[in-house]
Image 1: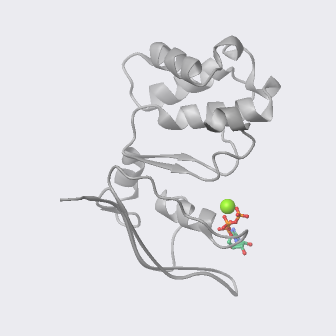
Image 2: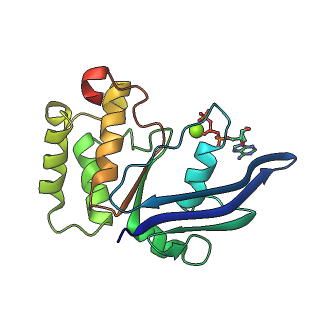
Length: 171
Ligand SMILES: Nc1ncnc2c1ncn2[C@@H]1O[C@H](COP(=O)(O)OP(=O)(O)OP(=O)(O)O)[C@@H](O)[C@H]1O
Ligand SMILES: [Mg+2]
């Protein structure tokens, strides 16, 4: 039997007079990759923000890993990670320090080893000790995605993750 990772029913959200989400229904099975497609301004980031508990909906229901996003947002946050449309990395820290910071916040036993493995997987070992403020756009994006994968979250939200990555990296 398949299990449900994300369930959205009749989800609604308006910004002042603009109705952005007008009753969205979707279901995502555990172990699957689900792509939400739509034109600019269609409401993709709005849905991701609601599902990752950054934004409250106006109506309908949404649950992630069985937890209602408006009733148990802290439980939802324990089970997910989010790479937003715009990178959320600290430019003053190095790449390794950014990864170690997330690993510590996630309660990983060996943060440094986890960070170094991620740096290797994402081709950032040579830049590990460089300040992220001096990274190229694609390097920042790779670090941002690497930070999202730390701690094996049950659900990973990626909002336009390939923006700024070259085709070799997307393979
Ligand atoms: N905080 C906000 N205040 C007012 N309007 C907003 C806000 N956030 C989003 N919107 C509006 O909601 C609509 C949907 O925006 P959203 O960012 O969800 O689109 P998107 O599908 O992610 O677009 P893109 O492909 O450009 O990233 C747009 O009309 C946008 O102007
Ligand atoms: Mg968007």
